Image (cartoon, rainbow, N blue to C red):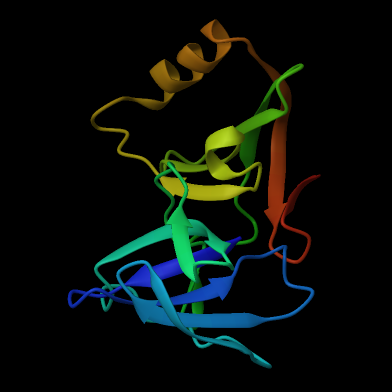
Length: 166
């Protein structure tokens, strides 16, 4: 799994996505075609606003292409910063039997972390617009779709890329 930063001219930089970083790998290319693939000691992610779009992708080694996943993530890390403080409390919901997790920040920021088949069963961060659909409605929608509240207060650990109880 790779996080992909795409620029206006179609070029992209992609980095192996945490927690799948046994090796740190950087890809570069244009459109979906991979031009360069190398192991690196550290990532230098672009600053917020420098890139046009962000997504998660798998790679097709045989064709040397990237294949975007059908999810709408927000970068969890950008150059020198992370999208939310480590101390952010999340309310965690789980869909029993379908291996789905959804959590929303208790602070009203619209920060959501989820894991499902659309995200390649990997934890993904997304900042949602609570003005368009408020937090209570989003929670009610999850409950109506088979999710059950598992924890009222957990935090997301960037080292393990998982939720930990307070």
